[in-house]
Length: 155
Image 1 (cartoon, rainbow, N blue to C red):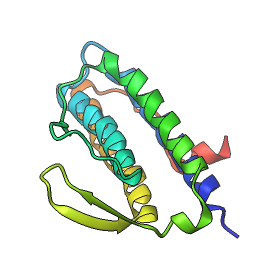
Image 2 (cartoon, one colour):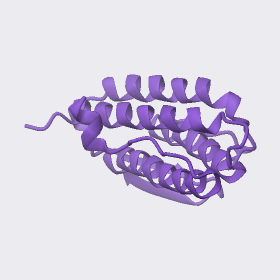
Image 3 (cartoon, helix red, strand yellow):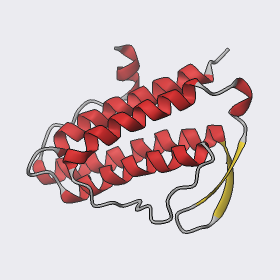
């Protein structure tokens, strides 16, 4: 039987690993400003979604496209991973299908299952890292890190 808790913690470990690899690249002085902006968005939305999953209100002035500098990413990246891992570790089997009511940053109400929201957070990170990778490659002609999930779980 699939252990959802273990599965999603592994996905967040993978997400953390990939974010860390890209964060190193974004610390370079010639990093794409658009790539930096996307990473900031990725990190702030991870926290925003976790608050929603916990039933907490996000601040009304939360900026989902913050003007953060790469030097601020590492502590946020670490905290997000720690917070998500603790949250997932404490979930009970019957909570995965629980419906979470939340509002978007524009105030639009929605309701989705916890498992779908958690899946979205992981996929959202993958989507934006692909954008970051493309920007870095096009701008700097750099060698991108290997971030395939299958390679991660083989290690």
